[in-house]
Length: 317
Ligand code: NAD
Ligand code: UDP
Image 1 (cartoon, rainbow, N blue to C red):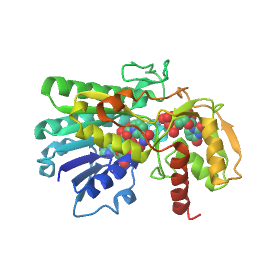
Image 2: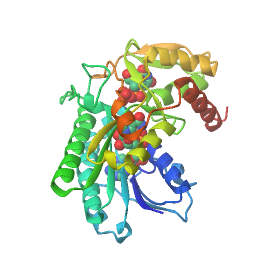
Image 3: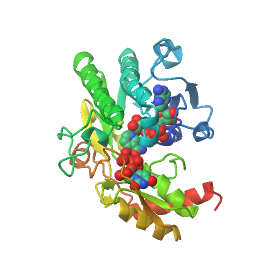
Image 4: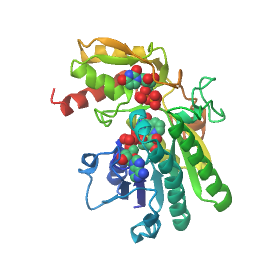
């Protein structure tokens, strides 16, 4: 049994990961300040194995708290993550990915623990190459609404690099590509939760721009398996690894697929494209295959069907 810290535990990926780790017999200490996460996401977790601490990961108090003695691993997932949230709280987003990441790296250093930092495909910005491999340096705008997220994740990666090279902290950085399941709150604002909620409630399906922009969607169980493989595998120490599903879709294709799978009469409507919205996104996952023997297994139709069934229950349909 390991003692594992999960930051961002009340969010979509954090709550899923914590449940998985507890089911495997580990003890989890979860941290969250509930800025976008919801307490109901962690209500069901086994109390004997799970402790929740409601605190900002940037807080100085964290490093003095004896509850964090003798930890083995840290999954640092805390961050505003949906464009809706990080654009509403841009300064908090910068803080959590920089000051919060330093705090977690210090905690890893104190405990000689392994740490995984949740970075993002957004570090590639609006990419000029496709697919994006870890060696691509990105095309990011510092002067726009996405900069707070993209650039603070990039700086978070720099801190990981420095703690690895200066202090030999066992870091690994995961660049996560769009992940989905019904674990996304209905009001999260990201595209799959919006489209499925709209289709099931008979509201208009809101495509931004022409819908010709692309994303590559990974089902949550695949992404979480990727995180765990990265943590377990010594090959991942000091590495940045893309975790995502390389099957690319246009957003309009996703709108039609959701409409078909939900049997919905909702209309597809077109709204203005948000500023700096990346035109394409598709991971190169050769490194994950080679170092971790990881690749996604859930095709989008299957993942969407599971998502739709679970959203139906949540919405009482
Ligand atoms: P989420 O918004 O559902 O969860 C993030 C959690 O972090 C929330 O519970 C929030 O309350 C918490 N949090 C935010 N700031 C905090 C702070 N200062 N102190 C403590 N807790 C704080 O998002 P998610 O989709 O679960 O994303 C988890 C991580 O993965 C994030 O770091 C995100 O940037 C990264 N990521 C996710 C995706 C994806 O598709 N889900 C893609 C790329 C990167
Ligand atoms: N999008 C959309 N309608 C929505 C929500 C999002 O067309 O209701 C588009 C958005 O403009 C982007 C893509 O879907 O091109 C993915 O958006 P999301 O917010 O899920 O994540 P991103 O990858 O942009 O961070």
